[in-house]
Amino acid sequence: MTSLDPNSVATRLQVVHTQNSSRKRVAKGMFVGAARFVALAALLVLACASARSQERPYFITYTHQMEEPGSLEIATNPLFGTQRGGGNFLATWTEFEYGARGWWTTEFYLDWQSTRRDSALFTGFRWENRFRPLLREHWINPVLYVEFEDINGADKTLLEVVGHDGEADHAVPNSESRRERKREMEAKLILSSNFRGWNISENIIAEKNLTNSPWEFGYAIGASRPLALAARPNRCTFCPENFAVGAELFGGLGDRYSFGLRDTSHYLAPVVAWNVSDSVTLRLSPSFGLNGNGHRFLLRFGISYEISGFGRRVKQMFHGEKP
Amino acid sequence: MKTRARIFISILLTFIVTLRIAQGQDAGKRERSSVLSSVPTAVHTRPNPFEGKPEAVLAGRKLFERHCATCHGPDGEGRGRVPALNSDVVERATPGDLFWFVTNGNLWTGMPSWSGLPEARRWQIVAYVRSLRKKGTN
Image 1 (cartoon, rainbow over the protein chains, first blue to last red):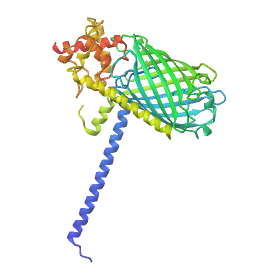
Image 2: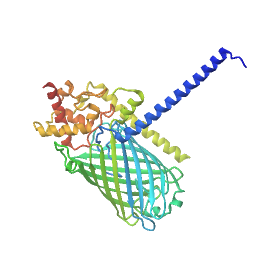
Image 3: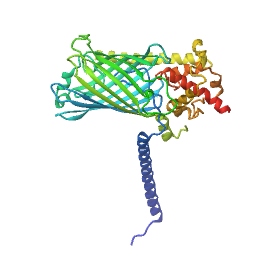
Image 4: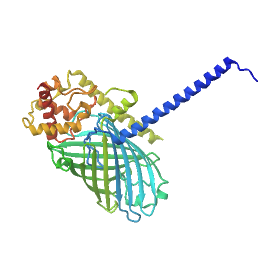
């Protein structure tokens, strides 16, 4: 029978106790972390007291309206496209738009597509930033836009049309087109004006594939107006003030070596936006190819959900900051 | 490599110019005692086309709840660093001043520009904001 050294046992017990405490602390930390993650997810889904921002009705053209500081907008935008020489497709981008500052909006995109008689795949991501250099309203309000995208050749979201982009690019089977890697920088000069309820916006686009390709250029022009300028006193869903209609015109302008309209595609797209509630907006836009280089028909649909004060709530959650 | 360097330099310059312009405007603003003191005279004296129309106040309230209440509170009482709207400063401001401020915002400090809303709706919001003080006094 071995004798037990009381000091040694006490030390071991202390070590075991310390280890248990440490494990408990780690477990508690993990639990708190998980709880915060769940709470954050719940916040995203069930955010209450959301507020409607000034949602642009366009899909392609940007206006000078920035996301309100601290607000997060989550949107998904499926695009159905007809394809000659290939299967029709459904491409989708999901976007997370956050108002970092009053003059700075940042946005993250995830792109997917599914082609009939072919495959479905994730095609990449984009990260864009918009900066408003002039802090006051002017007749024409400039906004600087910078985007980095890491997508593959199978991307069919047509978020912008530049260079000699055309329908033929999308006829390639996914198994081949996905091998092409597109790491691109895109810059836009956004010019936008509001006049008598109308918004008129012009975007000049320059895009560069970082792997030794020439600069490509494009444009997007949009005009829109709400159906009613003044609001009614009562809350309503179908009243004209909740609808905005307009049109977009966008297309490519060639590249550095062949600038112009030759071998480029152009689209005309009427748009309609409906503010269903204070936080949800639906948008619909059929696009028609104006020449033989573009798709004959595209149909875009968008649903967006705005979480106002998202940044403040996250700060409260993690730092206990008072509202 | 040379092209990449050019791209990065262009982007960097764009960032710097943007920030400099924004900072310059902000510094100009700080010199003034109040943001409202920079309202152009023509706008300062503009009357609210919805003045004296109770339905405009109701419509303004609806718009306020939709766009402004998250930051300013449901009754414009203010929250944290967001100023109260039932204050003396707002009481002293003309409808034109408030309209100008709603239109331009103060992007550097976090107040967004609401120029995306049609002019009529901005005036309706002004009508409601002006009614807050009266409501508080009563």
